[in-house]
Image (cartoon, rainbow, N blue to C red):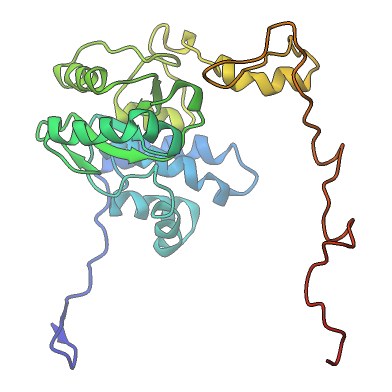
Length: 280
């Protein structure tokens, strides 16, 4: 054991990661060959391979990183650098269901913060922790591009929209009870290990599993429809407490491109910067 001058023990160097059992290794090698064959450069297969080894144990172990390094001809340091960069790769044992509560701006103000706090109390776990039965891992997550359904909860990256504290509690209770829980949109739920294998690029072979689908909500598609020239009639929203008659044309407010405002560049009476002559 090595000790620094400050008396801090550094311990023994970490031993190399153990290998998979022979039968597991053979199966993973067969899958790995299929994944690697999809890419002109084998190194490009690292991300799906990390999903593959995650599907084996529910998180990316040191053994999994060693496997990826060996089949791709990389160092374990190179694999670890990638595995620790992306949050989708778990670095410690996790539950069958990854329950993520969006706490980014819109979801937060619509109730996401309250949902996340309530679920921590309800499940008795903190952020990134797993329930004692190994069923649910709870975490707060960033924006999932579903703001028109806020607040959003995701389970193994499938959407559960327009959640409340009560509906989120019911959701995790159903997951822990083994009930057949259906996402608001998207594919049917499966365990996190099964999800990881699908993300590695292997088909979901459950009957009817690929029939599920989802799309953006109405508000998300307004901009697209406008870009296509499919604009509908204008709608004027008046201030609270009164407003103009319905047949009165609202006052126009041109954009800065239509009616530039006076600035230091266009109005000499509003100069910008120092007014003293150079050298004074």
